[in-house]
Image (tube, rainbow, N blue to C red; front, top):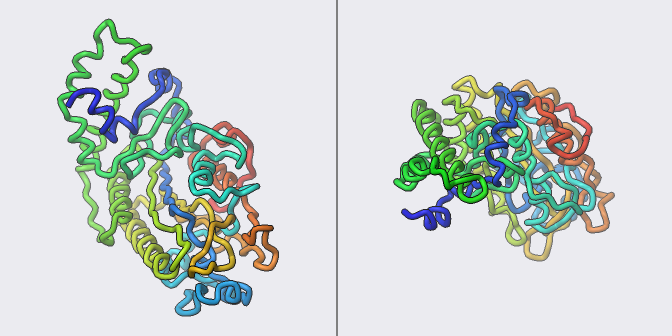
Length: 395
């Protein structure tokens, strides 16, 4: 495989391309903010309908706003006002055990209803009128990372969230394929020629150094992970496979602090009920299997799981038995010894909506990031988020 073909087609290369200050990025890292705790991100892509996820089962406005879409049967009531969608039954045990915190009304000022723009805002931790080229987790890696495998996304392509200004994570949906790709003869050629005098940081030197790190990372991930296989049964779907691989990485003590996973399909403009029910079932069953896996290997206590979607949906259903893009939404935080489990706050008023008919946001999503960075990862959240945000009390 020649260099041009490799650079064009290899997900390994595309996930590891650094700017020319690559070497300096490694030299400037520290060990502070890079302890033993791990963060797992779950992105529900497309804008999950939060009102049919956490259901206000005692609110007439909810039922009147959604005459054909409101959930009326088999609601899993968690208190007098709110309950789970029936498909979230597997998470009931986490709720009852104090291992789930549900934060309602999460959003940001001047919300954007474009999937791509709103996702960029969530992934970069920017304001709605601010455009950043680096992600909040990428900037965490800039400051504290040591190797590309310190952050892994379970996909072929790396999200903006995982791209720093000087340092990226690594993307792979199959670590065994990653390892086989890294064994390609091209990498051997890179190793043989890297020390050639004519190579420098100003031409291909930094790229070649990146490839060397890629080969090293792939070897490390493969050889460390193959030692311990998961014994937990997982559902047969792509999202569950992502979490199973993450569990295997964690249980193998891979030196990775951030994992990024995603489940897509939540853009439910039409015929929402069956689509969302199926997706939430995949999510809940897969997450429960993941938590059980971590518990069996004594890793759950040191792992925090954050689930988010780029925006919620409108309160009123549309004419196609679906919902259109909205604003504020709920997020889930799963972990051991949460300081505030259950419902962190009440659902926003359904009678006092914003001008577009959306729930008003109460909690800026960046306060959640700041809390996780500061309280969980012991990192300098102000530097990473380019601003100071109030910390919450859920971890």
